Image: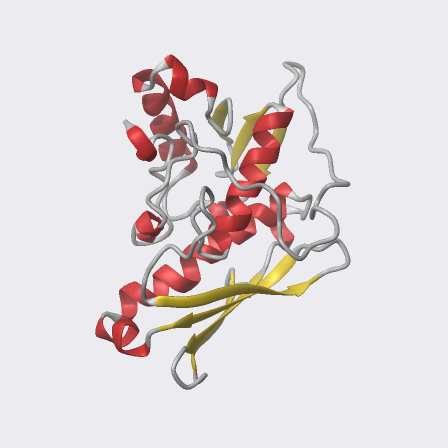
Length: 222
């Protein structure tokens, strides 16, 4: 099953395959330290605990990533049924449940919560959470911006190879904007940002000349 376990959630047009990494780690240690930060974002936030003793974090419909909550729940159940006992030990959540309002919730231990938050931090800036390397060759750089007083980023600046980007603009635009916006949005919620308040401003630049190619706010709100 390898590095695809628990990593089937798509952001919009299935662009989340850019990371091609699983949520379990499969024996690899995820990088959890965040360079350049004096304190871990969200470290003062503790998610609510249910009667089963799990931390519960609910993601709004705007962070579904192109699928329904019911689809995400069914895929999670199918993945778990097919997973080995070793894979289950390293999963980043214990259960994913769809809610009646269309949102979904992660049910996690404290250890899983810390690892899932680290996963989304690195995924949100287009890096492999296990190596912290940029995920794709055509991405020259990706850095967070607009940090709030808690150290949580609200912006992302991505530099790309212009020729590659324009060769398939619709695809690459989603790859470097909508996909990381979903990941960063989930990270914000895991750090305690209310689901209805998450927001990400993405700026895509041409690495060769610094020209702004694309700029947008996520999610789109009226």
